[in-house]
Image 1 (cartoon, one colour):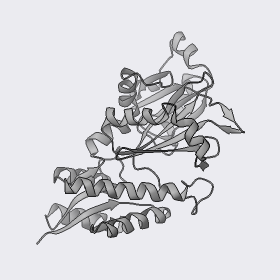
Image 2: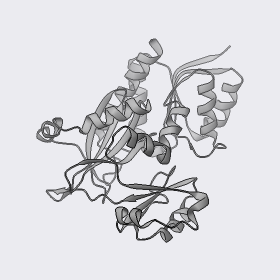
Image 3: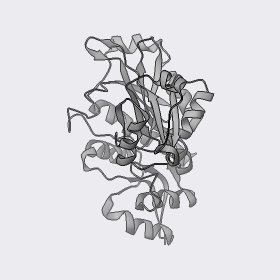
Amino acid sequence: MTRIYDLVMTHKLDADDLFIHRVQQHCAEQRLTFFLIEPLWVEPFCDQFAKGKIWARALLNMHSEHHLPEDNYHRLIWLAHERQTKVIDPPDVAIETFDKARLHARLVGAGFEVPFTVIVPRAQADNFVLVEADRAALRAPFVIKPSRGYGRRGVIMDATSEGDLARSVAAWSDQHYLLQRRILPQRRNEEPVYFRVFHVFGSVWFCWWNCFTDRYRLPTPAEEEQWASTPLREIVHRIARLTGMKFFSSEIALSESNELVLIDYVNDQCHMLSQSANPQMGVPDELVAAIARRLVEGVSQMIKS
């Protein structure tokens, strides 16, 4: 007999307790069965799933290493996808957007405002030389980032030449590296005008995010009204339409030339560390709770349709 869960969730971080508890709470309210696939359970769960003894209608992926095929969570996500579980977000869709080099060209083609970028294949990184036009467009210092990196690993914020590629390669081995013009956000009231915007099943929230200190702040009602007339939210809706992603965040800065520039394109498996758990870098509790509720609502609509 197969044990069927309505929603299972991969997760590795104990720090996201508020988010986990809210997902569990809203599943109970919606009368959805729920299972949390912590590291202790991932191998036996994958084994039972493969044998047909367990199945899930939906899987919320909060942890898998897209760039590591041998990762247990990565294998589980693909297994669930192949067994017709509704994965949020499907691995083929998520991997296409996770890879910044692939996504960059799609964003440029769709007319998004993104930093000037030169993409360097790993095979060319050791001997790569910028042409003078690209060097002038990048300016110095510029940013270097691995195409499939996350958590700032391998990101060089103070690159002055192509020789700095070696620092990024040493910190994070990847297939491609992006050299990008460094965008300096405007400052207002001593804060950078820099946002992290969350998209969850069509709902969008934006937060002030200080790219220098990692601190989040919810907008005031007056700021909500002020930014409602800008394309801030529409940018993220457009990304969702372009990529097919249901749950992700993007980083957007207001540049010195007064343009909203997409800086970090798509972050899936959003880190939902709460501000009460970590005031320095946590997401405001109110927003964590709202995202958990919307995710469960979206899952419920998905599996009942």
